[in-house]
Image (cartoon, rainbow, N blue to C red; front, side, top):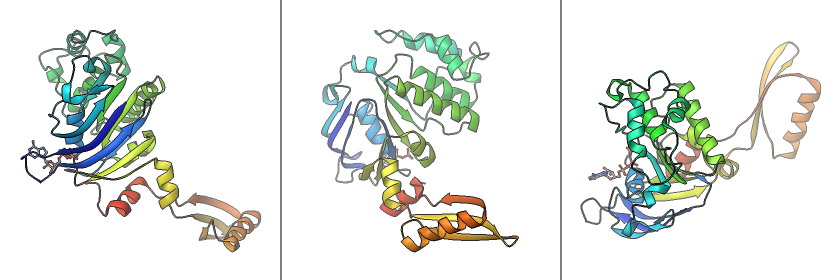
Length: 284
Ligand SMILES: Nc1ncnc2c1ncn2[C@@H]1O[C@H](COP(=O)(O)OP(=O)(O)OP(=O)(O)O)[C@@H](O)[C@H]1O
């Protein structure tokens, strides 16, 4: 669905690259997370992919189109929901969607259905200029789905939303993906990436440091430990065991068989910890 080969971009046309020899491929049906701190080169890469920035150097294919020669038809296949909500403030929510759907020459979705899906029903006739930041964000998100995109670019789709609305947005992303949409997700948020992505790329200083599935990364970088709390002689005991060392494995079984277990947790590395370990950088 996306092929990127030896991609470079310099804003000043010098050797100071915002994107520096980036390579990756995204298969149909994948949710691919592009993760990195501020200034890493995420937006620059994404903007080249969707034609907002001109390709300077490298090869980029998006939904079967070479972005060197972008055809209008490519936009029938893609959807974009970026962090800066750019809705028309003098139009209502529903008018924004009705207006936008006319730009496509493929079958589009019913604006009322989309308004409901993102929880803006009851506010569909209010001018978008009167919407809160989160509501504008949801309207932009709904708008990005109007052409049933095969390839969906999402930039920080849950940032600034309250937890229940963010959970709803995550569910919609999962549902659309199950229906076949390929997702390119740009974020600093490791939790959403961990929950949604089939694979993630870590990008820092314009370079991809690693691409893998969150599960494989956790297996590779996670510590094989388990924290156990149990009651012994009326006292709460906390102990940590290795799940690899034979003697400690036997001890876990012994504790389970003989004492009242209160809590038991594996010490799985978070994506954020892995990011720091791999790149030596935090995510902000
Ligand atoms: N229009 C521009 N002109 C000059 N330099 C720019 C421009 N846009 C971005 N840059 C620089 O390019 C580099 C990559 O920026 P980019 O916006 O792609 O990062 P990002 O990972 O998307 O960051 P954020 O998470 O903050 O959006 C940064 O050093 C940034 O300062």
